[in-house]
Image (cartoon, rainbow, N blue to C red; front, top):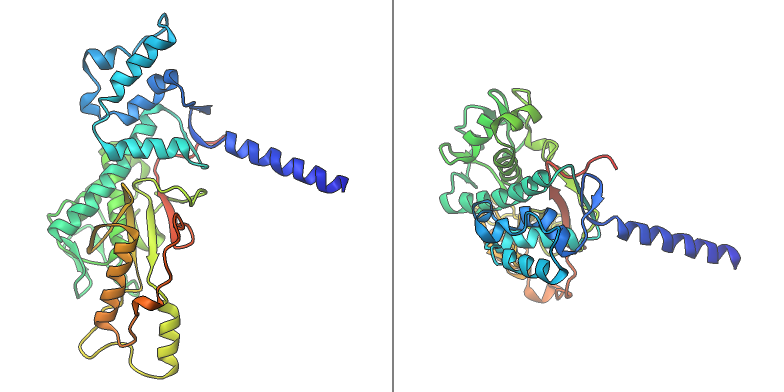
Length: 338
């Protein structure tokens, strides 16, 4: 019994330490949910750059001789400058997560927020202008990229500075026939390039062939330790309902999977969480989880013989996202040595 008690105490201590280390850190210092730390750290990520000016903003620069009530009033005034709901959600989710988000500086925190915002914006741009889109044959007119043999609809950089290569792939000036997995990586690279800037992005990726979609992000993606918290800019894969079982059943019957004239295979969708309980992937506009899964089901049924009936679909448990989605963090800045 005494060993069990010791084990339980040790486990509780470890859990307490883990919880204490969660949230945001700046230069190894935990950021607290206080008015003082909001003024010192969080406002620089929560408020858009073009609103970080004026009398209200400047009132938070030095509160040394202010009372707690005066500081609270200043914080409330500055929070009214938080015009971007997605930016605000990113910071709040990081603060409330059971995962540690550690940055060297406040500027690095803000840059990670920009990465996430720009990645989500680029996915919307791809769906709107369709310069990166589902089509055949696999190809891109972006001269810095090629499609390696054996990598269906995935591309790798073959020349040019990495910043130039990402802009060429993502600014809409070239046409790419791809799919959702590669599109997500392109969006994340775009977000990183815009957050870092040309010189810093090229320094991070100095090679003329440094970016490759088959590598799953080329150093810009980390697995999440907290799969219960979705932060805008997170990369997720949404598996289609019962897809594997239906395929096994159909193959066992030795029938053709595709309907005559069909070629499309919708096993699932790589998507970004874009905030406000919505997701977006290549070819699927901003949708709730249930809405996106219905698109997967109906598109699957359009092209394949074995149909997925709504009666086969289990109900969505409230908040049960972690068991349905594999979460990766879009991240160029987080993680410093602790």
